[in-house]
Amino acid sequence: MANHVLEDAGSAAQLEVALPHPATSKPARFERFLENERFLAFILLAPAVILLSVFIAYPFVMGVWLSLSSTSVGIPGQFVGIRNFVKAWNDSIFQQTLRNTFVYTFWATLFKLTLGMWLALLLNRHFRGKRIVRASMLLPFIIPTVLSTFAWRWMFDPTFSVLNWVLYRGGFIMTKLPFLSDGAWALWCAIIVNTWRGMPFFAITLLAGLQTINPDLHEAASLDGAGAWHRFWHVTWPLLKPVTIVVVVFSIIQTFSDFQLIYVLTGGGPANSTHLLATYAYQLGVAAGLLGEGAAISLFMFPVLLVVVWIQLRYLRRLEGV
Image 1 (cartoon, rainbow, N blue to C red):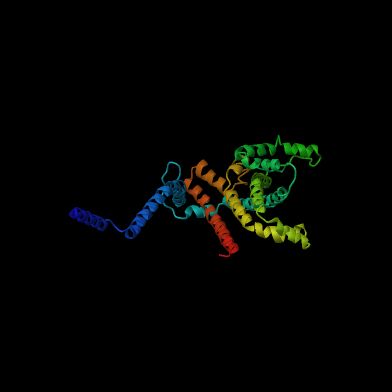
Image 2 (cartoon, rainbow, N blue to C red):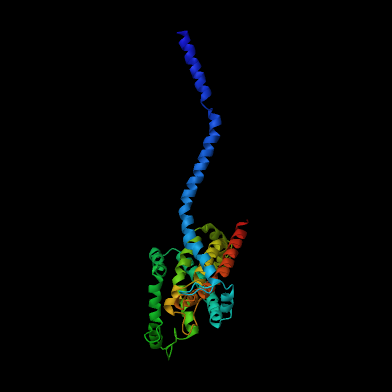
């Protein structure tokens, strides 16, 4: 009997020696866990990386290559360096297009910011039917761009313009206004349509920023004798500045590369006077089949937008004190 007890004790001792100590097994298990986490992270990120590579990286690299070649529809073309960029820079239509793009972006963004801020301040107050008004403000932003632009095109039509009819019947004009038949008028009409469409985005975003501001700050400033303008300039605007910068940058990027609105409203006319970089690149690259020249014109947008984003990041870091 004693021999059996000794044999059992020896077997237990051998089992304890054979089994790894819990303290020594934790690092190995943790390393395996980290390896599994890295593998899981790779699996989860793989779809996003594939999508970004296929739909962003590859088209961008392909666009750069086309801009440096003489490729056209049906002709592979050869490497020509920066000849397409030089040709575009010396083109009078491209010079007009570049000016139009900057003018269109500047004034449309300024109008959207001004009117959007005014609407945000108005909607931040309490009044009856506030929710209905807020919901209705999103209609210009919700309606498809092509559909709403067709409606504006009908209102600006030189023959059946409802605006000309109203102004004429009201005694404000004696002759019809050349809304879309004159280059200068057509560009400002496009700016108005872009402002109408983009203003709700500014208003809703700035309204969300206004709701994060503590009302006690305005009450304290009011008790100190500050008027409405001083409260806005010294309390509201500094606290709303980070949100405003982000919204303005998004608007600049979207407006600078706008295509649908101009293509449907004017098609770049009359006589190429309302072309933006996107519409002119489409006209050369797709309509005329000159893929290399069209890609070169579209790439003129890249450095401008890159500078805009860089300035935004630097300014936001300065506001955060980084």
